[in-house]
Amino acid sequence: MYEKTSANAGTVWPKVNGKVSFWIDQLGPITKREPLPSDISVDVAIVGAGFTGLWTAYYLLQERPDLSVAIIEKEFAGFGASGRNGGWLSAEAPGKMDNYANSRGTEAAVDLQRAMFTTVDEVLRVAQEHNIDDSIQKDGLLYVATNDAQLERLKQRVEDSAQWGWGPDDIGMLNADELAQRVNVQDAIGALYTPHAARVHPGRLVRGLAEVVESLGAKIYEDTAALRIEAGVVHTDRGRVSAKKLGVTLEGYQATLAGRSRRMLPMNSSMIITEPLSEKTWAEIGWHGAETLGDGAHGFTYTQRTADGRIALGGRGVPYHYADSFDWNGRTDERAVKTMIERLNTLFPATQGVPIAHTWTGVLGVPRDWSATVTLNPKTGIGMAGGYVGHGVSGTNLAGRTLKDFILGKDTDLTHLGWVDRSPRKWEPEPLRWLGATTFYRVYEVADAQENKNKTRATSPLANIANTIAGRN
Ligand SMILES: Cc1cc2nc3c(=O)[nH]c(=O)nc-3n(C[C@H](O)[C@H](O)[C@H](O)COP(=O)(O)OP(=O)(O)OC[C@H]3O[C@@H](n4cnc5c(N)ncnc54)[C@H](O)[C@@H]3O)c2cc1C
Image 1: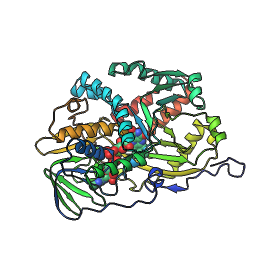
Image 2: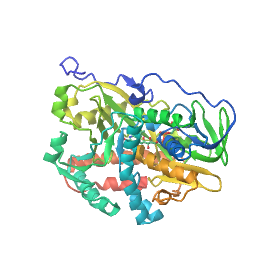
Image 3: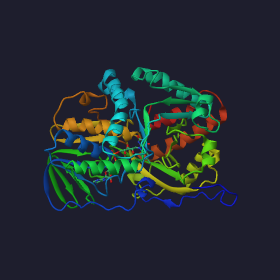
Image 4: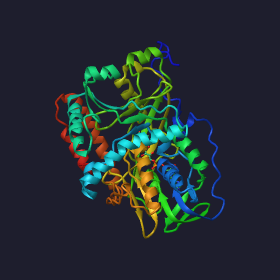
């Protein structure tokens, strides 16, 4: 437990940088599962052992325990974003509802949102049934405004959400006093609150799920990299996996596979986590529940209070590296660490000088229209799900259930949701992709600074320019 003294004030630099994530590191040494021993043939092959792949396998084997399911994983289950995220299990549908309505009609978009509400409880149910992640707690989600423009946007978001199936019990605004009863955020003037969210420990959830999936009969081959995927076969660096139905669940890593670059931008998101805070510090912060908490800025910050009394905080850091490159083990660059520590200290001044235990970075998948897709090509038997744009912890569960229905050839409510069978256009070739992604995040930073300074309710026009460059309008 950390106690602040004059001697340690200011010594905050992370003790560990990279090493996948704090969540994975906290679980102890990793013993990898056996790689693919030779060419095999199975009913279903899934590529990528993150939440999407694991949930797909889970529901497949719940319904059809007779199927042989192989999961091909380059590193180990949970190595990707699923073992690195902020632990927000939230009912916000990933991506833009307008895009889903435009693709498949308003009703299908609303159905998607309704399915997301129940998805949070579905994950809780499975976690409880199989005794996975006892730190899960459903206390809702707060987006805190610290200036008038942010407050106005959050109010607008609440208003807009009504058209997508959110009722007054699903979402609303808190004034500054109501917010202070839950948590003290410096300069907060109000917040959006929804009860539809839970805090999870991503490492426990993904590792626990992998063990459950294995116990149901799936075979997870780790240290086995897919190199190329074609109808009926996954070519790996260890041999071939033949299967009539394939699920590609690589999210931000898709771009590393032959023939799949430009479909999904591998966007970085970085995190820091403190050592456990003292009772005194928590008393100042006053965050007694497990609400996941974000801000209303364009360069979004997300936080959680962990079950063992730390604050985990994430933000974009360096959002994109040229030509889809990224640090595989998740090292965070110094500027991003500094920015995140500053943000932590600004939101919660009581954390000044608190040591940071770990920093890490992961990649998430961003399609060109910033909206997710679940699909299966009946001709090739190749399915995919992903593009959750940083909101995949719950989305992966719904996507996994949907991909399961596609693989089993079923026509269900899930196979008609708003995000099904979409094919957004590709990202621009380099250097345009890098220029665009770097520019719009830089412009968001300037827009945030402008809104802090201007003290008006209007969103900075620069943010609209950044949204246009990004394709998020
Ligand atoms: C830092 C960070 C914070 C986030 N915070 C949140 C949050 O709080 N809430 C939220 O909802 N979402 C959050 N997200 C997004 C969320 O984590 C992802 O949307 C979700 O985990 C995606 O799961 P996935 O299974 O589709 O992909 P991943 O978990 O990325 O899994 C893909 C897997 O494929 C493997 N792989 C890669 N290449 C190959 C290959 N060639 N062959 C075989 N396997 C391969 C990888 O090792 C990895 O295990 C965050 C993401 C990041 C990076």
